[in-house]
Image (tube, rainbow, N blue to C red):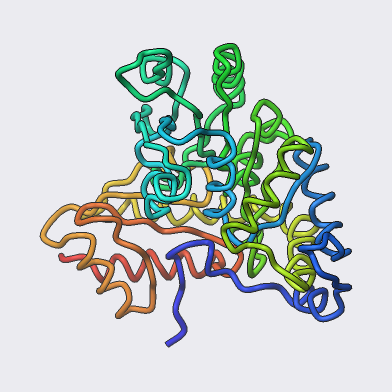
Length: 343
């Protein structure tokens, strides 16, 4: 069966141009900083984000954990939104790798602002852990791809820096956020001390993420990457696809957002699904399944009809549009959902 795969934008396959670039990539040993293609990717990414330097890492989780390790001390807390990827989907790495504790807070609709963050900050009390870092995820995956406004991010960073606190951006889908806000990606990255983004999601590269920040920070990040097993050798073969992703794939993200809207509007009309299309800002839909079946049962019924999606729990389901999902696929997915739902 030819499945319509809406589980995640991580399932995207590299384009023919990426495969060709990978096949002819110039390579060297990146641990010795001698891979010209990796170096070019890092320079391109840093320039696009408006940062001094960048480093290529195998995964977004590793990128986030490198930054937490470097920004914090053992025994400190990290403030983050309770639905954030770092808190929910990185297998407690911040505790295991950095000896830090999560201080989750809930933002309205997943959006953190300073008024939400400030009460959670703890400094100077000998009986409790000090806050060591604030992290923001934009877009916020588990909140349905919600976008945080630039003004809110700037205020968080400005006020945190006044208290001597660094702020890290988990920008796994920062190019989706920039597209939705119709701003240059550097505008979103500018106020943050460090930024991580993924090449392997909406940008469709097969492997890899980027960490960007100050030059000295990135120099030390190479050591932490090595410690975590991320020191790759002739990784220019992978970086070549990342270069194509940054040069060619950013401009087509708007198509994924448009398809997500089409999908959302269709699903919202179905009895048994609760979804407000106005809340779908990027390429991610999170909706409630109500009625006589739960989300996990709907997931199985959709699979039988050629559509792959993910049940986040008994009530919520997630669908994600991407390069390999067409407008016609979205229409077929709505029809499959209609057939899968009880009368």
